[in-house]
Length: 465
Image (cartoon, rainbow, N blue to C red; front, side, top):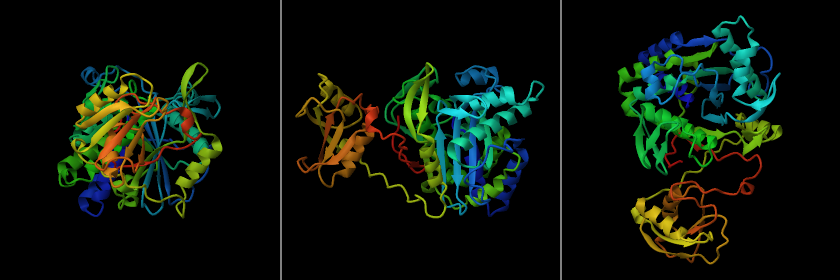
């Protein structure tokens, strides 16, 4: 669940109107309506960021459905849940000058050290705190605070950062927010259909809201990388929401702004010191290009004690990653390179070569490309049947053609080849190829241990799984 949406929506709505009386009013409404919790622990939350200027905020998605009616549960394709599962955890860093914002997602199955409880999946931290730290006679509010505190201690230890603020939202709140703004545009590389999440969407750009928006960010089954691809879904939806909030459709609709802020404040729970107006003022100059999304450095899926987990990079790599992220005075803050331009698939003539050793794969890929509008000039065998990686080759100056094909075959390598005829592109299928519209399954050895994924920005509209 894209927990960041509610807080981001509230902040953006206030920030774009921060200089007006209306923006001040909306911010006051939000701050006065927020649920508060004693989330920040007195100990176990030390590290980089204790300068009072930059900000580290932990956003948490609580999979609670306690407030949903039977009709709403049916519409959401889910059932009642008591609400101690934190399926989404994102650390947001905003530098002191407010020039950018970094969203770093933690997979819920990250295998981590939880203070006082040994190693377990990251989403167990909140549950342990909720169940055991507050005492047998604790109220629901005290249990919520205890869960938040143990989760913050766990994240602080992993990242080496001091967490300044905390925000939590539930499943139903996300559903309602996506309807208030009238939906957002996302782009799927391939059709998505899954009975568990309820998603049923075609390939290509489309506007989604309500139950399909929720299904979009909840789906895990059928994605090539499971939870890691679900994280990309969440980040993509947050970016799309930010673009929508910065558009005239929202900026010029005062009624929509009021409903958005009030809906966000209604279902948010934040720490006792967070002031949305202050945060909005700090982020007032941030644009979609200035907001980066990343996933914490990890080694990918693994097994531990008979369970499926995500193995994170070692502690030194993690601390270096977050220290670099938090360096407001000369760290790696260079803007991400612009994505290559693309064209209509009908303008991309593709020759398909089978280098995988799998009979008939070239014809299968050609059919998939034609379904997506690519004209296929020829099919055949490559010079070898031992290709392990799928390759896209293009002539000098045909980068846009190659980028268009690459969007249909995510993960394929792209290279310039002087032997390729101008105006055409070659697709050489390797053993990692699955299908057009699906990410290639690159061998795990190709990924450097502990390497972080390249960041995407809120302005990125390329297709995803």
